[in-house]
Image 1 (cartoon, helix red, strand yellow):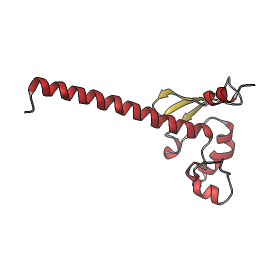
Image 2 (image 1 turned 135 degrees about the vertical axis):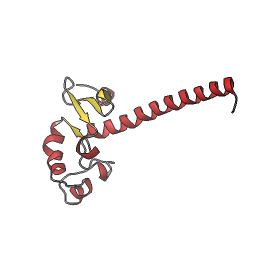
Image 3 (image 1 turned 120 degrees about the vertical axis):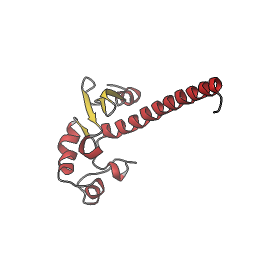
Image 4 (image 1 turned 90 degrees about the horizontal axis):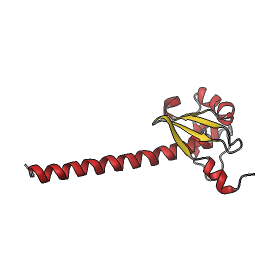
Length: 128
């Protein structure tokens, strides 16, 4: 049986084949990986896990909002879960978090590169 740290490590999302597709290892079946597509369903996202496919996706296909699903008791929120994530599985929530971290890091690297290029250009050509 894995310990708590091993379980937390299993939920780490890694980019799959595009910036909006991730792999997340299953906590209950460590040999299985779920694919999360962040751009599916008008940016709501989709996951290949059973919880999403059978419990959450049917409501999304009917056009039910997360807020409506929670208000009508169609889904239950986990402790600390935002109502806007009412139709999101834990894998989808993790991938959104990881996507934000990935984009922040890439933006920072891009901004640093542009600042260095601007500095070099200024040093070589002057301000005008």
